[in-house]
View 1 (tube, rainbow, N blue to C red):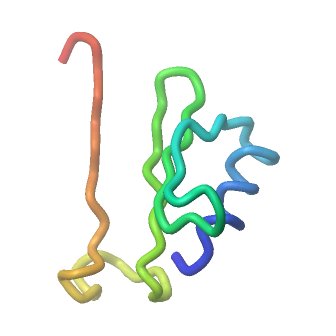
View 2: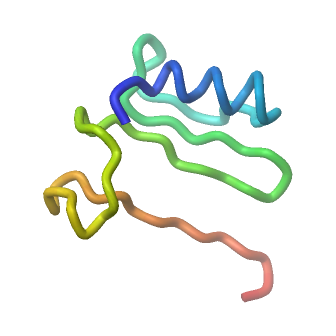
Length: 70
């Protein structure tokens, strides 16, 4: 992803997510959006999206799962 601000606008306005964190406040490179129990991490890596196996290891996406009763 190249522009976190654009992504945040999409998640908030089109999908109804709330922005619960962004760093820095202006032109963020990392953010967390939440809707109900779902949280999504959004980060800028300065590259176009590709499947993970094609990405440079330094910009592969991380995953985070939080459930009350795994």
